Length: 235
Length: 319
Ligand SMILES: [Fe+2]
Ligand SMILES: [Fe+2]
Picture 1: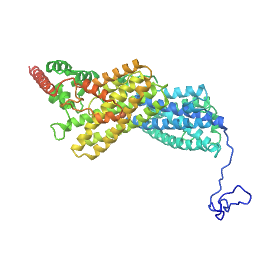
Picture 2: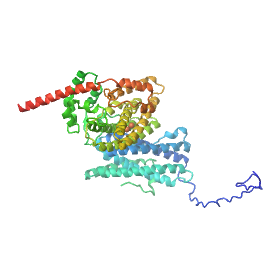
Picture 3: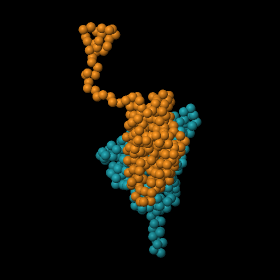
């Protein structure tokens, strides 16, 4: 390169000076995000494993239920939700090796505690064809709104720059979860057309929610999780 | 929720009418012999009559007697052929309930095998969405040809035959046996839609067929994976698939025979991971069963017997 050509970057010797004035060429808005978040790498990894556990089980439960639910639009609606939940579990899994969990960790799911594992089994318990209200209420009135609230808080409180990949994943998962909650509510509104059926929904909601609160939710830290954030979708 | 449900536990709303699978099982195992067909079907007449009561198939039973299934269901769907509208409705309804059972089969594969590899679960979850869309597509196509859910009885034969408790056999039965049959039936339906200039049907079914080829591919890959390093398990799984293929050939109705109602979709199946050898086997397995001539002859005899019984009942009634 001829020495007459102005260099656009700092050279190796003291007499070489760049003519490029940093940022002058662009009107870039200031980055208002701040470093530091509520979770370190280890606790984010643990939470992602907890989230993956919930998403993977919701996928499997939905798969099992399709054969036991007589209402055709609920059957077919669940087909899409099962695929959505699978993608959410998969995205969480892809994040784990990036959080120093090892190459094989992409399929690592972990319940926060035995209570949450028991809660998942309780959500999956309704089986007979006349229990669609109990099935849909447990998953769509309680579990998914709880997850949405936890994801939302995590997304706001994790390190906005350093943990941005988790934030991106949560974006996708929350978009799907919001749609699922609306769908579940529509289904239940259609199904619960008598006082007796509305009462079934209410009873199921209260009993599953009680289990959820007792075990501390998906991360085992529900008291902490719901502090300052609206538990959206809960009635 | 328990694991491994039976076919009669599949939940349906009140529009649906369940047909006993024994009828399909017998239809699938008939030999090419007029007397044998007559003797197999004649005693089933009351059962068949019961299964079609108050469905759109009842007028067919009243007209053709117990052989109506042979005459209507096992015949090819050809543009302009006699009775093709009725046959198309029955075929559409059969496909629709088949898609429902495929959806349920894929969903149960997620629930029944919680320890299966993650990639398997992803494939089955994707299949759930695809089959759910297929159910929705065939609901629309049923309306398109003038039939609604529950107009005909449903046999859960497909789920019963294909849903093994062993994961390798489950994917062999559902993803290769059942989904392979779907490839054959949909290629045939696309041909009919082309012949009749039905662009709506042609395009929709073409998309469905593309999905089904993917599902067969899942099966081809997972059979290998689940039986890796265990040739004996692989052979048992292949044997199970051959049995399913035999049953799903419905006595040669789905075969490479000239008079088959549905031909084997070789090109689509090759793309989906079936080997030439497997397809030759399928052609051999499916060829047995009554010829069209046998069926028509048997149907006539059955109809005569049915008419004679009806006349006898009428005489008794008058006496
Ligand atoms: Fe399908
Ligand atoms: Fe399929």
